[in-house]
Image (tube, rainbow, N blue to C red; front, side):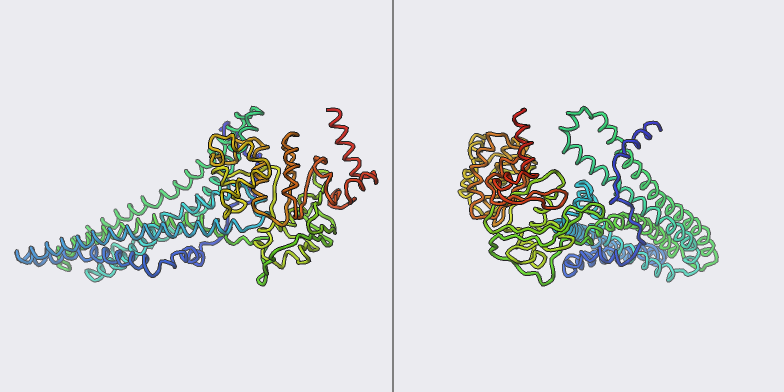
Length: 606
């Protein structure tokens, strides 16, 4: 108990506001939406699976009446050997047909299920790719991974076997009902008296089971989020010797996940024993009342034996339906979370009549632009500015002054709260996102390197580029000097985030990537902040090639990198307080002058 309390203390570090239990009624509309992913296969795999299922189910319904009524009451009772042999052959043929039907049913249903899971995961991933930055600002990478991986995987069993098995069991139950009441209505009513009680108890369990599986998904999301964070931040953890703290926090999250699974499986486990108890009660009624009916000549021995066969078969699909129902509850819990993402609309959305913006020149205008990340914090306060085509413009100011926000609005990662952002006189909200972003390249301070080769990472800026063009781009920014020293040169494999490369080397790759994309507008967001002085000299030389005939926006704290800018905007708390080139701003001796002097004094002191 003490350990649990300590774990809870560590868990309180984080609040997962977007991972609450989704309280929605169990509705057929959502189930229909989930099953709509089977529609593309309604003309091939689905009907084939249903045909194979009906074939094997029909055989199972026919065999017991042949064994009981016809074999006992006609062949054996009348000592008719030829009829007995004929019935045995018929039963053997029927079982062979059932075997073939089951083989193809399993094969086709598995193929159907795997295709549906593939389509659903592709749809979800594609949709997430198109969501705006605000969506990712409010969710951890781990929670998104849980939706795309775990939640969709939990639907796999439902689609690969559950749907067809549910149809098979329903047909089986209906068939057994009809046959039992045909054989003996009195005996059928007697053994079915337990069904209303069973239905009432199973219904009362429904909401509790569904909620428990939702909780399992939430706890798994927490676990994934923490694992992702721990692995990404392992160097920080070790440098501050917080391994013990990290392990205690993981133990808390792991314990919560374990407990949620225990709770869910405990509630699931209540259903099957209840079905078996109902089976026992039904069998007892069959033996007692069936013996009475045989004694007074109402039914024959053969009918009683057939009845016993069917009664045994009756509880089997009831039990399986309980399992499928649990699958369905898990699927509902997961599908609610999947559809929550699929129903998420991009904050930055294209208009229906949006047009492509082709061959932009690069003139950028902000007209009375205001922007707020939330209700309490305004990042920009009525900004109006103009960046001429082909100019190099610098944005400077203290942290939080609005520099990166301006860059994000130019790339249309966000839309302004009010006002407009225009390129070549066209409002960005009137054009397609792809046509704008395909002509803009952004180089960040923290360069992301993907798993793959150095060649692949540079070519990410232009997938159609040839090997020669990749090499030429690397040479232009000076990246070839370190790439050619690697074990396999441009074909050297780098792991996720490029940990085998230094910060400066990763940044040079990002410059080569941007140059290869050949953008009309280039945004450098603190792109030289992590580079040493020697590398910076190389970068400054490369920038002359990179910035030629392009509109460039440079965000920098290191003011030496922006001395050559055509225009410098000085920002403070979301407002432009000064603008001009380096010489003009130094003459004014305002805020920019103070920033330069402060940086110069710091370097002198160093």
